[in-house]
Image (cartoon, rainbow, N blue to C red):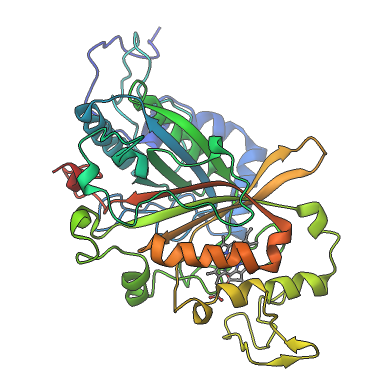
Length: 429
Ligand SMILES: C=CC1=C(C)c2cc3[nH]c(cc4nc(cc5[nH]c(cc1n2)c(C)c5CCC(=O)O)C(CCC(=O)O)=C4C)c(C)c3C=C
Ligand SMILES: [Fe+2]
């Protein structure tokens, strides 16, 4: 009988083994071929919709992937706390995470490749065997507490903490859960297949065992933003198009102004040049109340038409809102509507790259959906641009009656890694 695996205890070359290649090699393709009905279903689906699972985005580059990369459909976001005092162990973790992230985004197995050592737990947890890369991106960030916690300079990084990397303040009406907020490190895994995104976080958590502990995590199932003009605008759980006037990959000048940290921004933080900041807000949405609200009221709260996404002042989805246009009882786009208050003209020209996801986490004790929007935005200046805008929305936005902010975090996102370097290397240099 041919053994399923060899008996190699020494391990093999790291990475480089294709998940699909290995899958075929162990004969599972035969199972798919034997299933006539399933095979028809797959072929039929592919005819209707171009496959997004075959997509592959480069891991290496000037910026980390997962920011201007076209927003994928699924998210697994995790915040970690570092459990060691050792700077060397932290650096080792970042090296290992970088290698694993590069392998997974290329559709390769993490760690020891094929044939698998039989007497050791497999490096790669295996649930993505046979799956496409699904456009996986892995984006890693550093929280304020990595630089200083309770007055302690844990890893000799205090002097390099960016001025803009401070814990987000308490905003009006915040009802934050500590257990869903902050963290020394964050990892955003996005993919067009939920199993691929979960596999990525799980493998990074496994690699980090003994160095980091997962603090909290969030799954997202539908993107609520477009980050490329090639993408259709998706809808949030209030049923409105979301992401219409988002910053897009095709706007490099705006990205330089509002997303990418520039060399001159902060002398202490020149290591962050080419990086960004990730703001996360877990926002619960009172779905049941919303569903009992008239369409007129819903559109008044948002300031846009629910079906086509056009501003209430008229035109099409991508028409600029006319905030001066009068309606029956004041401006047709109300003073306290979401799009008026969030628009750059009312926020010193501020823009951001939104990249959030819808979520549901079951039901609460009253039988209501625990659902909402896991808001993610990438910004160049969180304190001087995001914080004032969030303060305005939390205080004045009429939509807040239907929202509750339950989680929060801010992380510095270092620039991308080049071949042979690890993510965040410039911070430790
Ligand atoms: C602080 C930033 C923002 C939070 C938090 C936020 C939450 C939030 N937004 C919607 C729904 C929509 N938002 C829309 C536009 C929009 N939202 C923000 C910022 C935050 N939103 C900005 C900067 C903008 C763009 C404003 C503009 O330039 O016109 C829209 C309209 C469509 C679009 O342009 O994307 C909708 C719809 C919800 C439901 C929500 C919290 C759950
Ligand atoms: Fe919004």
